Image (cartoon, rainbow, N blue to C red; front, side, top):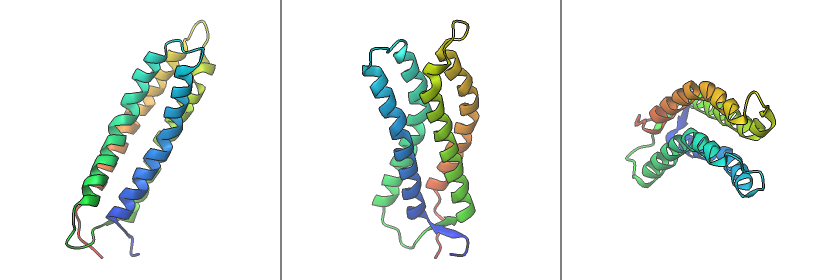
Length: 146
C-alpha cells in the first residue's frame, strides 16, 4: 500500500468509528432521560451534545459530499495521518463514554456529578480540537494518487 490509504475508504472507516462510537453514549443518555432519576439531565445533554455533534456532523457531511462527488482519479492520504485520526477519535470517544457512564457514580454532597463532567470537559476540549483539526484536514484532502 506504500504508506497510503484510499481517501474514501479512510473516510468511511472514520464515519463508522464516529457513528458506532457515539451511539452507546447517546443511547445511554436516552435511557437516563426517560428513567426515574433524571435529575439535571438537561444540563448533561447540554454538556454532551456540543462534545459529539460538531465532529459527527463534520465527518458525516464531508463523507457524504466526497462520496457523491465523482473523482477523476483515486485520491489517497498518508496512512500515518489516517492512523492518527483513528487513534485520536477512539481516544476521544472513550473518554466521552467513560465520563457519561461514570458521572452518576461520582456524585457526593461536596461535588455534584455535573462538576465531574465539567472537569472532564477540561480534557475533552483540547482533545476535541486536535480531533476536529485532524479530521477536517483528512476529510478535505484532495491529493490524487494510486
